[in-house]
Length: 200
Image (cartoon, rainbow, N blue to C red; front, top):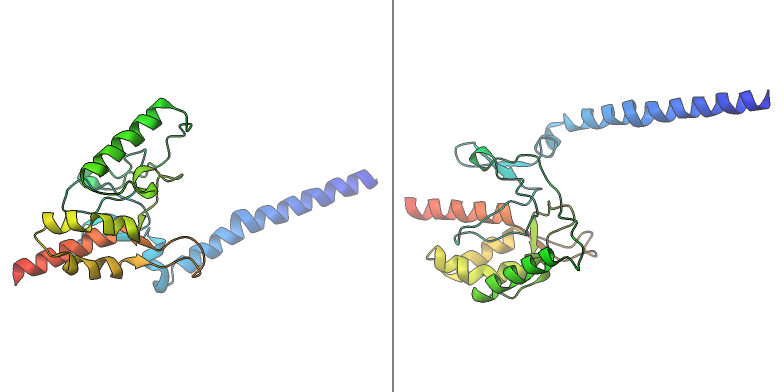
């Protein structure tokens, strides 16, 4: 009899936890997401251009290869390379061991490319993030690329510097991590400046 009571109690607890975690909590989050204040985040923090075309998510790092743009953190998966460079939803890391020759060769190639551009090969520019989704680089890594981008866009570095500052996020809770620059937002702000300059 005691055993049956224990089984019945375990089943009840399992059902209650299932209701909370599988139905009540997801529905609650779905309702919160419908509040206009959270619409941008609920839809993936998608940034759009002047023509209202999506250019990427501010939460997911994008691949920028043009000299006109700041380069973001490397990814092992080209998840942003779809039709019109729209996000494909694929992400991930390489899972290569530190001793793997493929990983070592890629790091050496990236390091050499950065040194040719007179850029210090900082960790966030040569290593991929664990998730492959990191949209930020450190403030120092952005400053390392400042002269290159300024030359490519025929701008003075002091014209781009304020844009870097505007797109730099501080430490989490002012304690953890390093200040990070959102590369997608930064590059889009540079494009807007370019358009404004041409119109004037």
